[in-house]
Amino acid sequence: MTPIIREAGLADAAEILDLWKMLHEENGIFPWNEKKAALAVKSCITNGAVFVAEVDNKIVGMLGVDREQPVYSESECLVDRFGFVHPDYRKSRIAVRLIRATLAFARELKMLVFFLLLTPKDTTRKAHLLARYMRPAGLVFVGGATP
Image 1 (cartoon, rainbow, N blue to C red):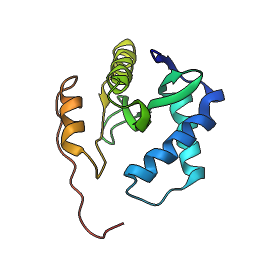
Image 2 (image 1 turned 90 degrees about the horizontal axis):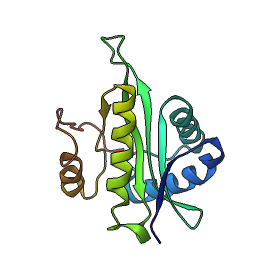
Image 3 (image 1 turned 30 degrees about the vertical axis):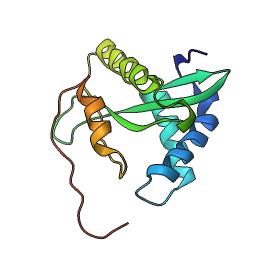
Image 4 (image 1 turned 45 degrees about the vertical axis):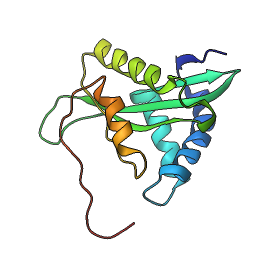
């Protein structure tokens, strides 16, 4: 079945949070805090957007962005908070469709959208995917203590 891509509402928050837990188990860097994650999902839904991929009324992929302002500007931009496709649905182009929906949303708002690739797994492959649709805007380096 072809997944449906749609914008999520608050009624989807619990299912999005469950999928995010799966993402965290696979790619998490810091310890999971369910309360903070739930607030982030709600903030993305109400202030930014969460796009979901749905198959048989089940959310199998998601990409959430929230509004932010650079510390030196009054301008607003969108920043990704979470993105994940269930392992059973990978290689189905869901990630591409979620990225395209998010970019269309950003263009509609006339805003930049930043994707931060913070993952310990498959970084190069994921970076190549993002580079097909966006231009690079720097790098992120991590040092200090191991979380």
